[in-house]
Length: 247
Image (cartoon, rainbow, N blue to C red; front, side, top):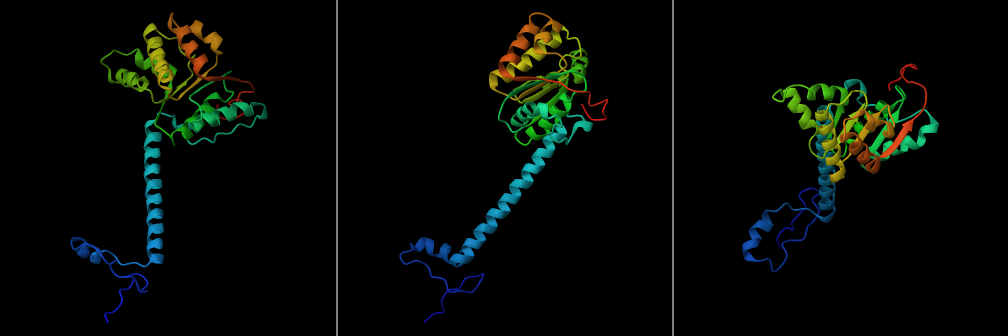
């Protein structure tokens, strides 16, 4: 009687090739790794663990690449999404929901230094677990849009606004918009609204005050889309900058 076939891992006996295996398949079956049921289960669990680790490593690399390319200012990177003021717990909750992809539009308004940009940056940092994101300071953006059309910085500013990917517009009210700048902002907002893309805006002004700062007809059109698409909050409180924090 021939020796029983044995598991290549533990040495326990293993059933031979099933009877009725077609001749053309026998050689392949005989060459296949020989594992008992327990060792086969263990090998599968190890395979699943390795795959999960590879997926996690790949996600970490993609996340790092997204964050490097996002444009989030260096001092605002890696902030925790928290707020020490219990009166603003509802705003913090809305920011967290936006950060994990549970909502698409969010407007954070309020006086200088109350924490709008801090909260927006922390939410954006977490949102990048889900998708690429572009952070734009609107005053800087308008300065770049004012350059000549063939200037590479101007082209990059237009490209950053284009598309339907996640977009943060920080300090929307801080610079006076030209008609061209207002048109570009309108197009960027309209594209996100139409496609259901992620949009987060910070502003010192309430939406009702913002339209008057923009050339017609873009001011009313932008505000109308923000009001209909975004949850809007006006943050109260003392300036974090005066208290030594990050606004």
